[in-house]
Amino acid sequence: MALLAAMSCSDVGEEERFVDEGIMQAQRSILLEDFTGQECSNCPTAMREIEKLQVLYGDSLVAVGIYGGPFAKTPGGKRRPLTNDIGEHYADQRKIEEQPFGYINRVRSTSNCNLWAQMVSEQITQKTPIAITLSNDYDEAGRQLTIGVKAYSSQDIADARLQVWIIEDGITSSQKTETGYDKNFVHNHVLRASVTDWDGDPVELGEGKRLDKQYTITLDEGWNAGNLDVVAFIFTPAGVQQAKKADALPTHANGKPSE
Image 1 (cartoon, rainbow, N blue to C red):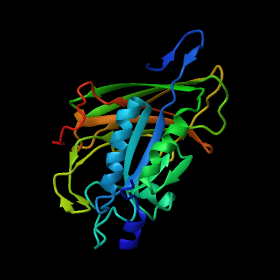
Image 2 (cartoon, one colour):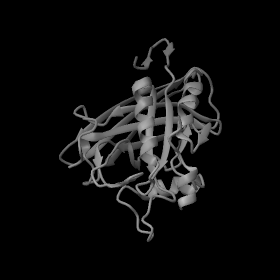
Image 3 (cartoon, one colour):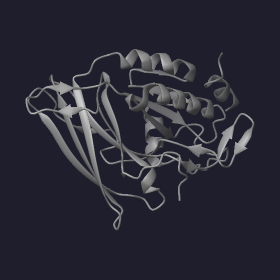
């Protein structure tokens, strides 16, 4: 475990529019999947790197913290509070052995978070034919969130799949750091659930084909609905083609501790 930690990241010096005529303005957004864990002392360094990138790129960078893998459990094998089945599924699927470990658009990946900025920069300059819009509606009484996903592509996209995730900001929970355990550490963009199949739903995208999907999920009582975001992205075997994030509720308040 100590060797794994040593190999991990260290401190080294307009909204998309759908137009009747089919004309599209699509700005490229990048998906950064951060495989992390509450027992990973180097993971807070990666989290700070993500914060810097979010300041630089704003909504064009969609970050998701996936809690699963070698540092998602206590030394005794007990799951830490933010570790869940879906996080473990993805960590097993990607054979994660080091943490933090970042995937940028599922095209580039590394455990050295100091390289993430370069990888994001490379990806964000590439054009995409796909635009995605999200519309969310929340029934507070039943804690039901209805998610509308629309997508359009100016060209045919082979083997496309749609993934829709729920993430949460502002979760106060323990985190191992380089100096010990911080019991009041604030975790952001934590993956909570997938409303599609865990490995995405197959979709048809191409000229003249508009994607219009609707999903409904009942929110877990332990989630702060006001701190939730919906993340949707289109991916193929060649990587993530476009990503989008939107507040689950209009009252979303980034950084507000969970109730």
